[in-house]
Amino acid sequence: MTADQVIQLAELGAYLALRLRRHSEVDSEVIAQIKALIADAATPQEAIDRLLAKVQENEDALDQKIGSLPE
Amino acid sequence: MRRVLLALIAVATFALAGCPATTGPLLTPPPETATPAQKQLAQVQEVIAQGAATLVKAQVMLDDEIDQGVLTKKELQSVQANLKKANRGLKAANDFIKENKLGDALNSANLADFAANEAEKILAKRIAERRKKP
Image (cartoon, rainbow over the protein chains, first blue to last red):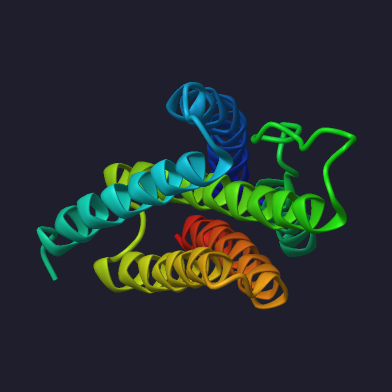
């Protein structure tokens, strides 16, 4: 194994570990946000309408963010 | 060396993509006295809510990846296209509920949840592929 390969492996391992940790953080953060968003919904249907509005809001923001990236 | 790398990537990709939801029900469950129809409606609504949660998580992960700058614009657009499909599925499921077509609503919601999970897997796979390239 060359030194470059060892460095590459270490970098990859570190990056993936960070992503795994972030994935777990996102899980907790998003569930907390979602629970707060629907906490005072009067009906399950109202809760769903709020959730779908949030999904759409995120989708629009992502469209704009990706669209602004260089080709 | 190559096999170790591939194994590491495979395990990490699986772990990234396959993490189950860490929550119980999002919506208030129906009372024991609810009719079978009311219970079925509640079940479909819960599937839609879980699908929306999965989708929001995938959106947050995609937003993160845009900031990381690891993936190309085309790759990001491809993942976003999958997330849009999932969103359309959830909207369809919600519309079916309003038309009282609960079977169709459940199918759409399940498909949407599947699409959101698939988008997340594609995202994880692309990141792993990109990182292993020099």
